[in-house]
Length: 245
Image 1 (cartoon, rainbow, N blue to C red):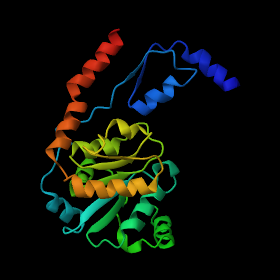
Image 2: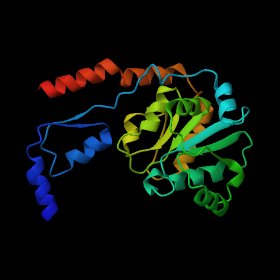
Image 3: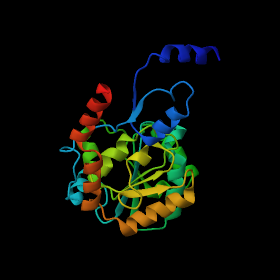
Image 4: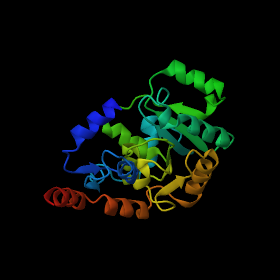
């Protein structure tokens, strides 16, 4: 209560607040400290010239050592084994559901703790179904991974925005996410991906199946919708207009 009163006193002089997603906007509108402040949702900007589709996914798969004859379903986040909110446990359940499908390969990145990951793979019997690419520290290799991926699964249960989702969608890659997270502001349900019911493994699996059957990677509809939603000039203008008023 003491800290809360300190926050109330300090933040009362904040003139305007910019958030990056509808989820953050909802949180602030429910906050006793912030709800009476002017708040505007404006997404993060990406370099749309760099994050654009690569049509030659076969070369990307070769460079990364991934099988060229399989669908690649990718999950990734920094230190996802020690960060429960990234939802790796939900991804594991998805792997278990599809592990007998010979046409699918699952890929993870962002974690260098191989011992812990190997323990996880043995515990849930997914050793043969999971390729680990470890930490990826440069944009070009990330771009190659998106190009090689047929689908990104990001079952975070708490996400302010979702930069990986934004980059992948700009690359034309369908994404499956959970409802009630910041990434919901990026994905268009059944147009650029699938928004599953919050914490529902069953609906997450439904989303993966639906996307694989109905959304071809790099479809023009995905790229067009994302470019329109994240138009750089519009975003900059939104900032200027909000700050001027």
